[in-house]
Image 1 (spheres, rainbow, N blue to C red):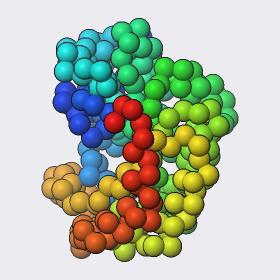
Image 2 (cartoon, rainbow, N blue to C red; image 1 turned 30 degrees about the vertical axis):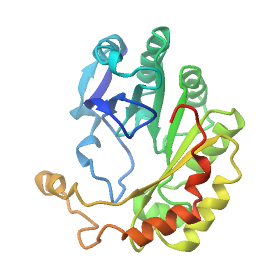
Image 3 (cartoon, helix red, strand yellow; image 1 turned 60 degrees about the vertical axis):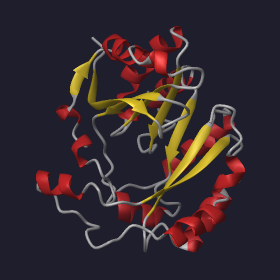
Amino acid sequence: MNTGYIHSTETFGLVDGPGIRFIAFMAGCAMRCNFCHNPDTWDMAAGEAYTPRELLNRALRCKPYWRDNGGITVSGGEPLLQLDFVTEFFKLAKEENVHTAIDTAGQPFTREEPFFSKFNALMDYTDLILLDIKHIDNDEHIKITGMENTNILDMARYLSDIKKPVWIRHVLVSGSSDNDMWLHKLHDFINTLENVERVEVLPYHDLGVSKYDKLGIDYPLRDVRPPSDERIQNANIILDTKKYYSSGRL
């Protein structure tokens, strides 16, 4: 049986894709971002088991609220770690004419098989990708996530090649990803892509500290404060976020 492991769900999501959305937060993630506010999603075994039909039935209870521009988003954790489940879930959703979106950091992406064929099958049923680019520089990406970003940027290029609509999301961390040099490099990279509908700056916050304390995990950014309004505005200017508000589904 095709089973997925779900950390939690949200029935009235307003920030993870267009319109009002049902959000399924998938369990399991290989990255260890030092600003992650959901360390309780790292362990896939800690999730609750669902079949695709069970999860869709739960989502469809919310359909009257979606109107013309809402739908379903799978987030995480990392949804691409459960490709088979998400593909079947989205296939069933498209049979119900539901808009589908994936919020992913792209870390599992590879052009090697069997992943690549499965990824392309998933794209057949996916309307939108929300791609989190944690840092544009590979060395800095390793420092803050424990993983390289080369395959993540390759995924962004591939999604551009196949014209899959994408929203780029970037977490702004004081003293790290808010550096102007890196922001300009991220801007230049985004400008090479032909499928970007939106760019979002997500200011770092420390609301997850209590979860780390509860789980007995050291929180690496305990002394880092959220970025100021001025730094947030600066990032939005450099990344030219106003340019991308063109999609009819926003």
